[in-house]
Image (tube, rainbow, N blue to C red):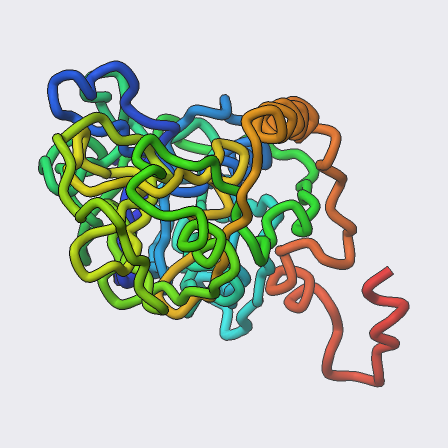
Length: 350
C-alpha cells in the first residue's frame, strides 16, 4: 500500500503549495506559492523538512484526513484552529494546538475547523508529499490548472502520497506563535504611477482604513472603503506587476495583488506592499481590516534585511514541546486507571 493521507473533507480551499515557481513570468506564468511563506517555512521546520518543501495551504476552514501510513509527523503553523484527533479504536479525542509537530499513526483521523485570527494555515508532513514538480515547483496554479495535486484544490477521496511510509520516533517541538500575528498596518512603497494621484490624495490614502471584501482569491483582494481619486485617469499602458502591487481600477477601490497575480496590468499602481510584509498580507482574508503606511526605499531595505534575519533565525525560535502538551493523550488515557479511585490530574500530567 502506498503511504498517503486520505482526504475525507477538503475544507473551503486546501491546495499544495511551496515557495513558488520562479522564473516563468516572462511566459505569463505567475510565481504562485504560499500566500504566507514565513508560516510555510516554519511548518517545514517543525517536521525537519527543507524550507521550500511543499505543504498544504488551508484557507478559512480546514480539511479532515485519515492517515494511511505506519505513521506521519505533521506540523501546523498559522491561524488558530481546533484540530481534533480521533484515534482508531479509542472513543477519546484530543484537541491539538497549532504551532507544534505531532506524530499520527495509521488509522488516525484529524479534523480542522474554522480558522481564527488569520485566513491561512499551513500543514507540513515529515519527508513531504510524493508529488512530481512542474517547472521546478509543486505549487498549485489554480487558474492554469497545473502543479500541486492535479492542478486543483483538494476534493473528498483524494489520496496524497507520502515520501515516507513512517516517521522516526523523536520528541515533538513547537514554534513561537507570536511570529505569525498579522500587523495592523502594512508598509508600502509608492508605486510607478503614484503621479496619477495628487499629493493630498496619496496622503489621504495612507490615512484610511480598508476592509478585505468578498472579491478575494489567490490572485488578489478587493478592498472596501473610501475610493481613491486619480488626477490622470484609471488606465495606463500595461506594464509588469509584482505581488503586493496596489492597483486602483475605475471604481477607485484598491486591488492588492497576491500569489497568482497576472504578470502585467493596466491600472495605475499607487504603491506596493514591501517584501518584508508580504507574509502578513497573505494572512488577511475576507472581513480583515487593514491600513497602509508609506515608507521610504531605505526603510524598506532595512525591513527586508530584518525579515531575512528572522528567516535565518527561525530555528532558534523552536523549542521542545512540554510533555504535558504532547499529543498522545488517548494512549495515556487508555493506560491510566480511571475506574478505581481518583487521579490527581496535576500529578498525572507531570
